[in-house]
Amino acid sequence: MVNPSPALTAPRPAAGAGAAAPRTDEAPAAGARRAVAAARAAEEAFLRDAERVFRLSVGALAQRTRGATVVYRDLLVPLLKAGGGLPSALAYSVVSVRRTGERSPLSNIVLLSPAVPPGPPTILAVTAEEGRICLEWLPPATDMLLRPATVGGYFVYRRMLPEEDYGQPLNAAPYPGTSYVDAGAPYGKLVYTVRATLPDKPKVEGAPADEAPVDYRDIFPPPAPAHLDALPEAGLVRLVWDPVAAPDLAGYIVFRAEGAGELSRLTKEPVKDSFLTDTQVVSGHRYRYIVRAVDTAGNLSLPSPEAVAEPL
Image 1: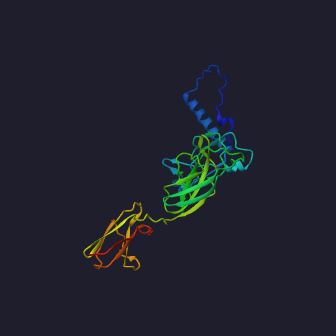
Image 2: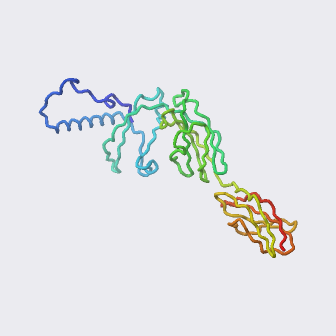
Image 3: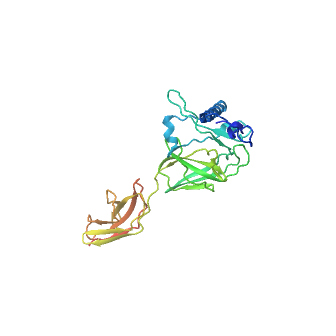
């Protein structure tokens, strides 16, 4: 990276600009040699003034590859901390290096005019709920030069431990508000951060907010069956209940009590269907039943309404 000189930002005018080009008897190869020499001089000038800002090892290459592109973000924090604001233009180039130390020629040199990004937001809360995680934050008060910040939106990032790097943001476009619902969060130990963007410049992201961790565990039981029927017959009781809609439903546990006794578990394993036939009954005895849904994490729902039956 380098703050470019005029030689890097604009071509030199030819001598006698506006006049007819002087006649020359030089062979075409001479012009090509001059072009190569000029490119080499520009490369040498760039390398003389540039400083290395990042070295990407082969092992870390996959983490920064997005499709067929390698992505590097230069936060420009050292330049901002040095004082005096950002330079009006910056030039970037990339070289590859063999293990033996041999360097490739410079890539093309890219010029850009940097914009001052917003400062970091302040995350207020990360709340785990069933099927989602809710984030709230305060907007940054200043930009990276401590001037009043102007924010165009926010990108929300999530990573799972022990991963060290964030991938793409959860939202494809800058989010305008200061709260966000992550409806696709997986269970596990998660870490979130938020970055503000400039108006009309979504690629200019500010410093990340301090990370907010959350241990997102499945402690949320499924709904209870809303209705239970106990239908007495000769020597048995048929039980039928309303099925439960839950994406992680494992089945149903049936509980039974005789007379005024305490309810105890009737089914050892979860019942997959929403019906059951109880043949372990005695005719003329009174039985009470409830059903509870259970999910794959072992969370039990509240009990269904109680049903009573006396087999014939």
